[in-house]
Every structure is written in structure tokens, then in C-alpha cells.
Image (cartoon, rainbow, N blue to C red; front, side, top):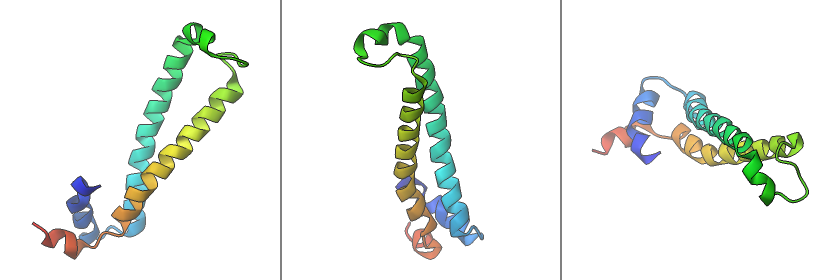
Length: 100
């Protein structure tokens, strides 16, 4: 967030409202999370045979477990993206652009 503070100040001074900034930062965070989720799911399915020895009480391809893990990780990513998005939405353009 600190590295992009000037960008958010410029966007805000050019007319971007708080909702647009919030949507932009949350969208970027969730895109990254989606890519990581797909890569992680693919890796877990490819390594299912190896993982079988580490799993107790569930199968490697248990759909309810995979969905639950995906939902928990998505909620965690959303929560981790919320604070920077909220700070970006509250940036005051005059304060950011004055610092230099």
C-alpha cells in the first residue's frame, strides 16, 4: 500500500471515488488469490498419491474438504486485502501529493 500511495492520490485527485479505489485494490487481491487457489488445487490433485500417506480420515480427492479449504483461504485473502483497500479508499490526495 505504501508503495502505491502516490498512485491512489493521483487517481483520487482525478476523480476516482472511494468505492472505485476499494474495488480496484480488492479486485487485485482476489485475482491473485484465484490464481494461487487454482495452482494449489492443481498441485494437490497432482500430488494426491504422495499426500495419501499424510491424510488421516479423509481421501485426497474429498470434494467437501477441497471446497472448505478453498472457502477458508478465500475468506482469509479477502480479509488480508480489506485493510489496504480501506486505507487506499481513505487516502487524501493533497496529503499524498504534497509529500515528496
